[in-house]
Structure formats: structure tokens, C-alpha cells
Length: 306
Length: 308
Image (cartoon, rainbow over all chains, first blue to last red; front, side, top):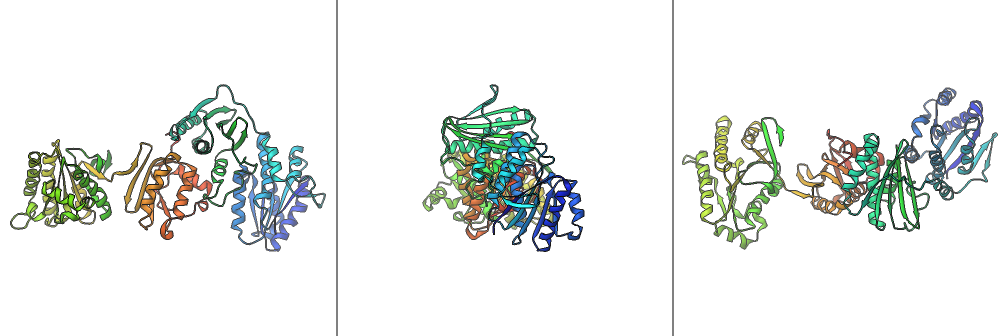
């Protein structure tokens, strides 16, 4: 069995409950591991409607669950693992408010990555989208990240579904280039990254990052710089600046990353620290957003954290 | 300096001891003694300008550090009186067989004074306190303390002599051990396996393993893997005391897991006192992604620092 990944496009709570409640209840009756991840007040309404299946459905507040796309993917993976051999049935409605345009792209990428990470999992996932309130851009992304659509009570194969690699490439186009003229700069000439950690840590704190975030940025920057030294070409350098409420740190070298990283690189949770890709995946966990750019002028890894 | 109940001490690696130091080593295992006293003795004997005075009943060839010398070298050191092994009975006991502190202090002082006529520039003295037949209880302790006092008088003002008093932690009651320790200003510790000012690796003996202090990054992975391999090659479960670890890179975590899965006997690596900052990183990636690593003792180590 493989994943059934459906986008459920609805208008208003009444239509939502008309579909979501039987979807969850049928799963509970069939002995599936059933989870619902939605925001209040819908969460409360669902609980009430499913009082007869109490204890058979696990409820999660989406506000807690959807904070960081790479971490959320890993959380879902843990959830699925904890359900062991049972078939999984999940109703999920990500949080679409409060993100900037760039972050919205990453949440759309997240929906697309679900198809990769859970492709072989025996699960039925229903991702709900309220057309009454969500911007058209979000609905459009939903149509491109789900192989199946449930609309007007009918499930259909989705002709606009886009392969996750191709979709990821599109997402990558949202990445930004260029640096402010006044960015702090540190040339990286030695394998000893102790001075780099001091440089990043001291500025991260000065630019207002809380201590935990500053520590995460130091760890992430150190990892990216160590990779540039190991696999890239000199000169290697690090830039750091503040952009609104975010601190941005970029490590660049003049090498070309070959084979080129694909848009899935570092997004799929590795099985263990012994697998390739563990480093970049951890870097993605540590900061809010990672952008990779490998081009004629070198390889650049940009870290955003706020 | 480290504060402890009863006094202030300077902890010093055995290789950093200076003339005038009267140090104290309460070892936990024979391996620790071999490691610390072995370095003390061997540092003195490997050259030609230092004399080593060892108060013990053990035969010379079985002394810590001496075993590192080739047999011919040991005979040479004994012939040249560079290594002096003083039996307890002749050195420390009076005719009635009672522990006689002034007698011992005199014996040590004689060896120190004669060193210069023998053209040695410095003298290292070590004594196995646990084997002294002091009377039990307060009387015995008083004698031992007076002995320490006399040794201190002989060594502390010296510009050429240093001494290490060694005792197994289990050889004396805890309060006597503390009283004797308080008669010393220097606590002797093992030499670090590695120390470049950023990363410091020190052997631990109970539990068996390594203390990892400072920052572990890619520039130091090779040396770290090498020292780790020495510890895990002994086919015992090794512990890493991480209480002083301020930074570990992501590849360092992979290195630990790779090493732990390859440890002979499959006993893995125990991580003790993981600081909050490092624990956050491990929790983020998940312990289950770090095969072979086991969470051990949880202390109250502070979090990692942001700036180094």
C-alpha cells in the first residue's frame, strides 16, 4: 500500500465537518491509527462531533504542530513510526496565517515533500483547505502538491499535480541573491573554525537573537563552513547581516557542488546520523530557512533565523 | 584552583608539576595509578638528569612507568642510582616495626641531598601511603599527617624536588583520606591525552572513558577519533564525560555514532553529563538517529556557550 494524499477544498466549517467527521470516524471503526491536526476552534468542534469515537482519535493543535516545515515533517515521521504497523489516517490543516511570502513557499514545498517522505507508507492523508478564507495562492499550491483532490464531495485525480522535484525547483526560484553592502564578512582560510564560531556567535547575540537561536546559528554556520572547506574551492567566506527580524548568514565558496543538489537535498529526514545528508538536514532543522545556490560563480548556502 | 570542603587546592596534570610541589593522588583503579604515577616516574627516568625516589615494597620492574623502559635501561638506571626504590621497612619503620615519620622524612631528605653529588638536577619522590603500617585510628592518622608535614617541609621550599603521595581511595577511611589530602596543596591529575587550547581530552578511570572539554570540530575529528579508539579498544563500555563540552559540530555527532556502532562487543558509548546546549542539538536530531550512543548520568552541567 502507498500513501493516499488528498487535498480537501471546502468552504466553511459546516462543509468541513460533513466530510472530516465521517473520514475520521470510519478510520477509528476500521482500527486505523487516526490523527487530526487542526486549529481551534475547529479542533473543539471536531472533538465534540467525534465524542462517540473518543480515545480512538488523537487530536493535535495545528498551531503547535506547524511551526517549522522541516521539523514538522520529522514530527509526522515520528508519529507514523509510533503507530507501528497500523494503517494511518490523518486529517491535517496546516497554519497559513502569519507567514511571509517566502515562508509560504516553504510550507507549500512541505506539502509536496509529504509525497516523497511518506510515499511508501500505508496511510490516508486528507489535507483540508478552507477556500472561504485562504488566499488563492495557497489553494493553487494545494492543487499542485496533492495527487488527489476532494472538491464538492467528489474525489478526482489531480491533473495539475506536480512532481516534488519539479515543484521544489520552482520553490527554489524564490530564493534571494545579493547582500547588503554593509554585511559583516569573515574570510575562512583555516580548518580551525573556532574563530568563525566566535564571529557568528558574538554578532548573532548583538543582532538580537535569543541565546538558543544564536547557538543554533553557530552550529549551522560551522557545519556549512566545514563542508565548504572539505568539498568546495577557496576562497571561502562568510557574510552575516540583519534583515528585518531575521539574521542572515551566508557561506560561499568558488566550487561547484557536483552532483548538483536537487530540490529534495536535506529535506528528507535521514534514518540515522550515519547516512549521507544528515549534516544538511540538521542544518535545516537548526535554522528557519536554508537556501542553496550553486552557480557559475560558486556555491552559496544562506541561513535565515529569527 | 578548586574549592572543596577543608581547603583550596590547585589541580595540576602530572606533567605540569613543578619543583616544590607536594602533590596528592587518591587513585580509583590500578589503571589510573599506572597512568598518572607512570607518567611521573617515566618523565624522570627517560632522560638522565632527574632522579626518581620511590618508597615501596614492590620490586623495581613492577613499578608504574618503569615497565615502559626496556630491561637494559632499567638495570642502567638502578646502577646509576637514578632510580632509588626504598623498601617501606627500612625507610619508614622503627626497630619495633612502628611507622616512624621522622625516619622516613630523613631517608627522603638524604636521597634529595645526595642527588646533586650524583649530578642530577632534580628529584621526583613518590610514596605509597596506603601500604604504611600506621596504627589504626586517630593515632595512625596523626603519624601520617606528621609524616606529610615533614615531607612538605623538605619539598615545598625546594627548587629541585617534587613529591607525589599516592593512595588507593579504598585503602583508608573517607575522613582520613580527606585529612591527608588537606595536607597537600596540589591535587595531581592525569596528563591530558590532547590539549590544543580549544579541545582537551582527558582519560577517566571510573567510569572508564574520556572527558571531553572545550570544542570539538572538524579540525579536531582525527585526533578525537584516535583517542576515542584507544579507549574503546579495551573492550569495556566507555563513558564520555561531556560536562565541559561547549560545542560539538554535527559531523562530530555522526563521528560518535559511527564509532559507537563499531565498538567491539557492541557495548556502545555512554554520554555522561551532556550540557544543555549539546542536549538540545541531540534532542533535535533524535537519539534514535545516533545508534550506539546511550544517555548516561545527567548532571547539572551548564549549557554550551554561544561565543567561544
